[in-house]
Amino acid sequence: MNLSDVSAHLGRWGDPMPQEICTWEGDYIISYLSRWVVPEHVLNKARIAAINFHPASPDYPGIGCNNFALYDNAQEYGTTCHHMTTAVDTGTIIKTRLFPVFPEDNVATLLARTYDEQLILFYEIADLIKNEKELPISDEQWTRKPFTRTEFNKLSKITPDMGKEEIARRIRATSFGTWKPTVELHGFVFELKA
Image 1 (cartoon, one colour):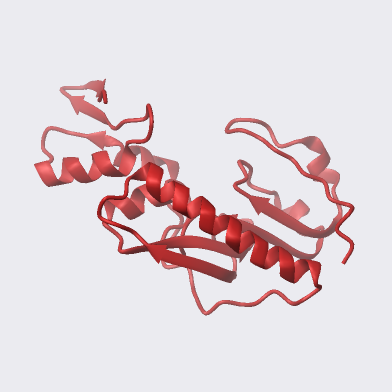
Image 2 (cartoon, rainbow, N blue to C red):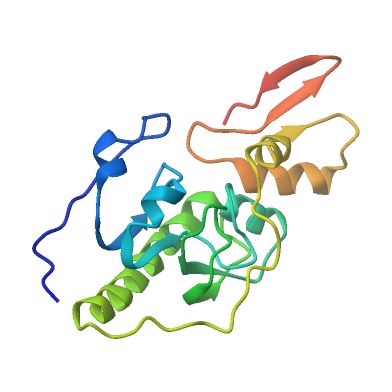
């Protein structure tokens, strides 16, 4: 396969989708840590496949995946390549790469290993595409509906009625660099400091 005719689009959270994506036509759409939900009319223009590399295992579709895995004290996590549909993180799974979650993991360490494994998975799938091989179909299935921004925001809140263990789980699951969970007390919201 000739991979010389490739167009790439980068964006940050909140950036609008580039207009040229709407007029694109070609064999594959490959979404890798994309900030956009690709519209159906664009997905339908992929002659062979529209695939996404999701930075989580099939147990954690949607947003805040690694945060929920840490909150759940998951023993295993991973990365998933799947066909794209109009509903985020619901398409048929092509392949996954799984790895253990360690008790000492936090958001930063889990994300770092996830991105390493995601890149390996990308190379595996890109090699199949380059050599014009059929994409596999995994036996794995999504196990739940995708997590939403509302659910993620709720995970990031601590209230006075929570026990010590619950607070510790939320801090572990949502502390990353300057981002910390917030504390709600008598209608006021306070940010935790490192």
